[in-house]
Length: 204
Figure 1 (cartoon, rainbow, N blue to C red):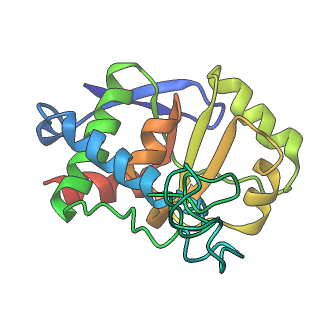
Figure 2: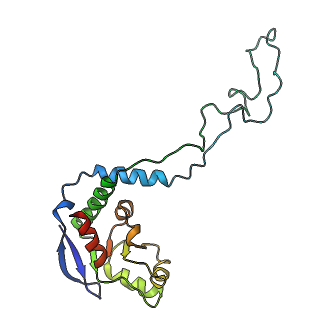
Figure 3: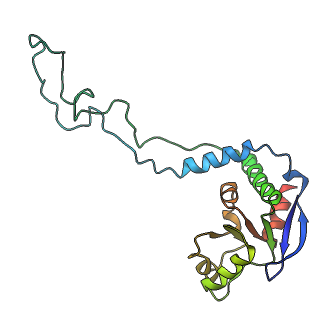
């Protein structure tokens, strides 16, 4: 598999072969990482009051015997309207899922290899919009002819960030923010050459 090298006009100039270590990776590594990333993004705000937390219910509703009805000790029993919730959700739950460092790297390499197979992995010398204008960033994105794109810079400067921030189908990050979830979430990937060299170096 190969990554497509683009020139300044975002046209294909050549190809770069991916390291052999990028192929033959079990896709389950990507599944585990994505599952972990999505779990970490959960708001964890769902909560319900138990019978101990619901207001009221201090008096016994009716006598224990003689009424012909079932026994009841509190109006806040889960069987009553307005009562507490039995086994309801609580917001003290920990959704974190551990993913090993090696698996994280395998997941990212698998995602990059998938992009290479689909012809959606691009390498450029530099991703920079010095003007900071959205129209210049849009022209770069349009030249790729892709539905959506993740741009990865070595260091993200303010002008480039401002240029891309209003284009809904693009997202620009710097090298240390790249992960398997983001790589898999976008249909194409544009990486600066310096970032690519670091990725390849870590894979060896």
